[in-house]
Length: 184
Image 1 (tube, rainbow, N blue to C red):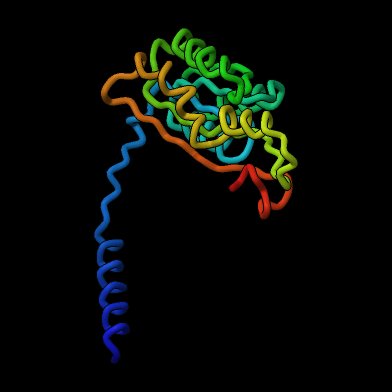
Image 2 (spheres, rainbow, N blue to C red):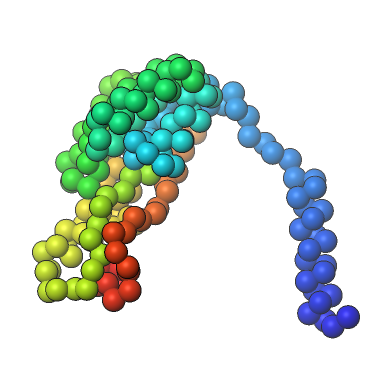
C-alpha cells in the first residue's frame, strides 16, 4: 500500500473510533425556560429552530418581516410546548429595528439567554450598473457579516456570562452571482 493510502486508512480508522466513542453532552432540559430571541423565524431554518426551542419549553421572541406568517409559527410553537412566546414584525436590515427588537424581547422575557441571528433580506445580485448608493446600502444594512453588529450591542447588557449567540450567515439570491459587484 502506498504512503498516501496508509495515511487515509489510518485517518478513517481514527475518525471511526472517535465517532463510536463520542458522548453527546447536550442536555435538553437546559433549554427549558431559556429566554430566546430568534430572528428570521417566518420560514426555513428559522421557523424550524423556533419549533425546536418550543419543544424544549423555551420562552421565545420571534421576529421576521411577515406578520401573518409569524402568527402561524407562534400558534404552532404554543402547541409544541413553548412556555411563553411573543413576536414582533421587523425588518432587521433597517438600522433602527434591531434595537427595537431587543428592547421588546427584554421587556417580554426579562433578559436574554440565547440570541439566534438568522435573518436575511432580499438582495438583487446583478451586473453592477454604477449604482453606488444601492451598493452602499447593501453593504451597510444587508451584508450578512455586518448584521450581527446591529443586534448584538443592544443585546449584551441583558445577557449574563452563560448566555449564547448563534448566527446563521446565509444569503438568498434572485439571480446568478457571477459578475456581480455586490457579491465580489
